[in-house]
Length: 382
Ligand SMILES: *Cc1c(COP(=O)(O)O)cnc(C)c1O
Image 1: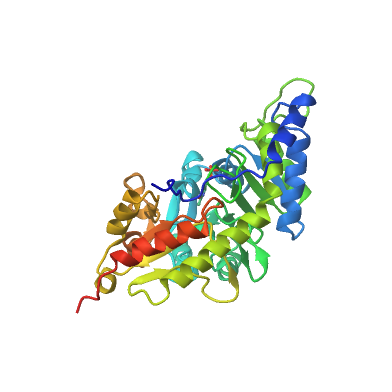
Image 2: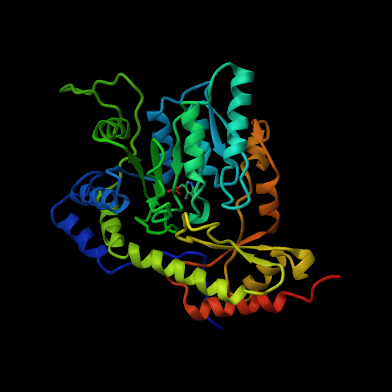
């Protein structure tokens, strides 16, 4: 029996232990230090555009802190992409605000810019005030139509917080995801493009915003000799040990991205001409996904199979797959929230499957997975 194949396992460069050992040798075993500073510098250089980076304990913390910086509070509304992981939306609730969900457009599977504008107008008409922030997501690494989203946001003067947790290295029109909005969030959880064992980062435009983010990430302590607090802060900084893992991972980030793209190309070749199986791909040349996870849509009427049948068959073959994210507007916990829906996210959820694409996935794994899926496809139903 072959080894089990997972969606996206962590993969170490071999350098991580050196940076961790250095932290121990110099007694920087705290949530600040040389590894944290260097990791932030390296991420900033990777992202480009003069962006600054604040390393944090999680991607969820980055989104939470981003909303704090945008002044989100009780009674506010935050527009959030519905087709996503819960961590895009939950931080709004932490702050007493209400997520308002907007559905996706079918090309990128991310926030529909036209529906976004409709939602903004309707919220203003109903409430007499604007939503406080907009959270588009670059889901599975596929960039949202971020230019169009930012244009709508600008027209109404609402800041954009990009959830780029899955999209480290993805680009739209040659620019890195996470650098378009007022703020951007990254995740280094164990299954993302790179890992710090657990961690995240907030992408900010300048040193002043960076200073404010650091202030709220370290308990909002005022500059007094004693501990003086005038605002509520958080304990969200990244440990110098975790940042050591991050520095090691930065040495293989480009290789990881290239690997995910190579895996995607191999799936594309394997599924070419297979009826009813559609691999998600960049909509046009402006898009350049990192293909964090490769995803397929299964049309039962054409393929004679379903994504659930494929999931069970692949599981029996020792391959981990996963249904696409269940949209937030269909989650029981968000049942009462306002939502602007066009049916796209719900349709994707019912028809899609995530396939393994991580750095441990070999060409042989891809061939085996594709062969298993092809074997499930029956002659088209008349
Ligand atoms: C992973 C993820 C997050 C949260 O990141 P953590 O580091 O796990 O807190 C947020 N949004 C999306 C879309 C994610 O996939």
